[in-house]
Amino acid sequence: MSQAAQNTRGRPGRDSIGGDGYGERVVRWRSGRVISERCRWRGAIEYQVRLDPRSPDDPDTVRALAYPELVGTPQAGDRVLLNTNALALSLGTGGYALVVAVPDRLPADPTGPGHVVKARYTPLQAVVQAVDEDGAPHRAAVAGADDLAGMPVVLADLHSALPAVLAAIPARIPVAYLMTDGGALPAWFSRTLDGLSDRLCGTVTAGQAFGGDLEAATVHAGLLACRYALGAAITIVSQGPGNLGTGTRWGYSGVTVGEAVNAVAVLGGRPVGSLRISDADPRPRHQGLSHHSRTAYGRVALAGADLVVPTGLAPALADRVAADLRELPARHRIVEVDGAGLLDALRASPVRLSTMGRGLDQDTGYFLAAAAAGRHAADLLG
Image 1 (cartoon, rainbow, N blue to C red):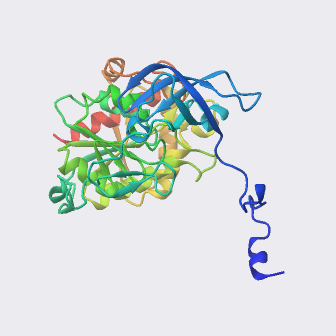
Image 2 (cartoon, rainbow, N blue to C red; image 1 turned 30 degrees about the vertical axis):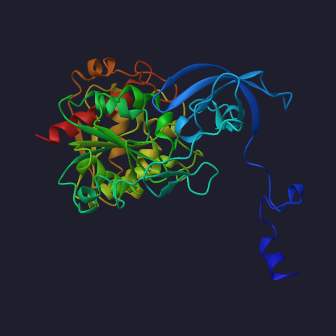
Image 3 (tube, one colour; image 1 turned 90 degrees about the vertical axis):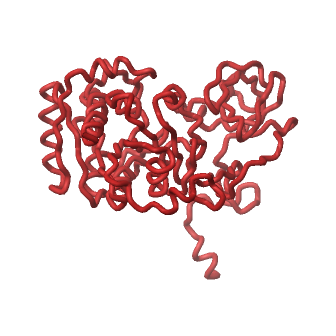
């Protein structure tokens, strides 16, 4: 047997399906015709699409999402190519077919500046202008910066924490959002961001994520962009909607919260942890202080953070969270924040509060913890 054959022997997915030398397909392709537009929000349009039959299990029609900046704007009657993976997997957050192309009516070529590529080497790689690349309007301010000057940065592992954190920060304080690439890559997917646009001074998408008001190659550059390009006094960092998890300690996209703590600290910011806590999640690993928060702050974060706990939690939940926090390294500071008035602030949120399908009344502790982190960040400004 040749050395090359020995090297590939036993590797999964190398069974030459179709004779092309590659393994199982990873995209469920479908085509269809646009029936009508259902609704739209910033950067995205939802359509009703009639599928061309390909499998007996295919529905007659599907909800399909198009990002006009990527594929143009489909019209009723247009033929569209679709990726239906999310539908086949019954994903809640991403339960759409995604429009990949309008092949009979391609959009015009882009004319904007920039040469930074995101979603790199995928069929829909997008060319954007990074905030700190040559010729960008904010290059001088961001490229020359190296310190956040103590800016509080609230860190959350779920996108659902964003409106809750923001609810407790006074409207007079400019707040930016930094979206990492652990969940959805297009910021346009988030209806939450659309609903909070009047409350945020801007959004920066970092890493492979794109579609923010500004683009950054890394979380570090994104943090500096929030401070010096958007003028934020506080920044909130989380992945986009649709997190990835395998049910294991390390196989979860929110573990990068710990890496974000390190980035904030090395840049001279003040990391503030929005803890993931719950007494409503049916999964034992997420009860009390979620194992995601325990791993991110206990193992990944090498710098200290303010880990915020609100008063007013249900007694059993408060006791369990306190016990879990005692197991974290001493470099972190446990901060108790007065929860008075936070429920009222959360109920006044301009967007619906929901995490894993549970609202404020079903998972009150989770949202209170996020709001308390926002209140603490505001208090740090004096």
